[in-house]
Length: 270
Image (cartoon, rainbow, N blue to C red; front, side):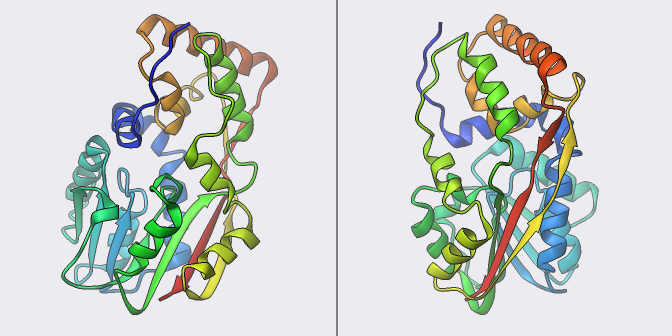
């Protein structure tokens, strides 16, 4: 069995860039569209998309804000940021500006009307303090929002990935910090209370129900094109191939046949 030090978050998601598009159309883009549609950025809005990835929420936000708006899309994963930059250029969305940067240190000369943070807040160091700092970049009356995984989302597939990897190297039995943070906000009540604890008013929470059929043709895309890729860190090509074969064989005989990506969105006013 191979052992290694856990990778940095930026390193993991930078590695997903080469396989991102295979999963994006079924996973990230539909979730990003649903997130932004519910939030409803105003025409001309000044928006910060924290932990923007390849632009799943930044691109629809830029369309909603229009040419008079601005979307600063920020992420530490350079590969994903470059994909987002290319998407914005292809769609002629000059108002979407992609930046490789640590969003916990991000600043702007002008306050924002809206902050988006889709599926990234639980990766931030000290989730509460980081979220409060981001909310501090809003103008008075501006809105802070997050999208996160609902209780039970990804769990069946995640258990299959863990089972497939564990024969190649020992896996920690304790949850990583991001998963522990995510579990703190994975119900409507918990997420609403957490948003209110940041000092936000008029907090609302919305559930996005979304599932993806899992098949032998697409299941591996949801490993290498998402955070599950962290489990493959530092494994050689032969070990990864064995994991892939094991996962697909188990999927065909035991399931699951769907990837549950049910999500929760919260928004509140500064």
